[in-house]
Image (tube, rainbow, N blue to C red; front, side):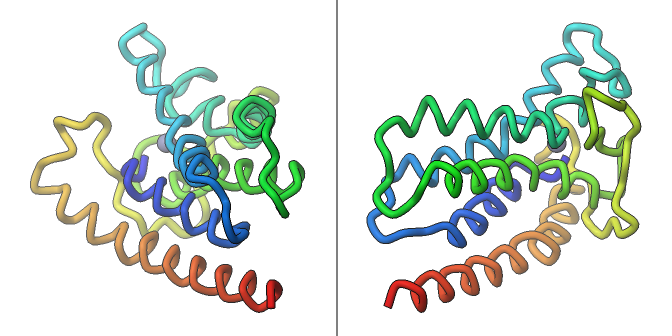
Length: 179
Ligand SMILES: [Zn+2]
C-alpha cells in the first residue's frame, strides 16, 4: 500500500474536481472513506488469508468492481439528501474514482504483489509499468520506522504534489464554469 494519508490526499484532490459551492463535509469524508477502505483487506492476514488469495491484500477490495460497488453503496446510503448542483451520477463517479485511485496508486509502488484490478473475474495481479512510489510497510506500528521517511518522501513527490496540482486545476475549472 501507499500510506493511508496519501490515499486520502489523492481522494481530496479528486473531490476538488467535483466540487460545487456549498458541498457538505460528508462529501469530503465519503471520498476519504472510499479511498482508505480497500486496505481493510489486511485484516484478512489475521484470519489466515494469504496475500495472493482472491480475498488477500490488494485482491478483491482493490478491484474496479469493488470500487463501483462501494461507490454505489455510499452514494445511495450517505447521500439520500441530494447535494445541490451535484447529481448522483457525478457523485458516483467521484466516489468510484476515489476508491479506484487506491488500487492505481498501489500499482505504482515498488513492493508487495500487484493489484487484482479485474477481481472477482481474475485474480491476476498487476503493477503499472512505472512504479516510483516506495511501498509503505503494512500496519501502523511498522510505519513509524526509518523507512517511513523514505516512503513519505516518495509519496510527497509522486502523490501529494501531483494531487495538489490536480486539485488546483480541477478547482480552477469548476470556478471558471461557475462564473
Ligand atoms: Zn492498498
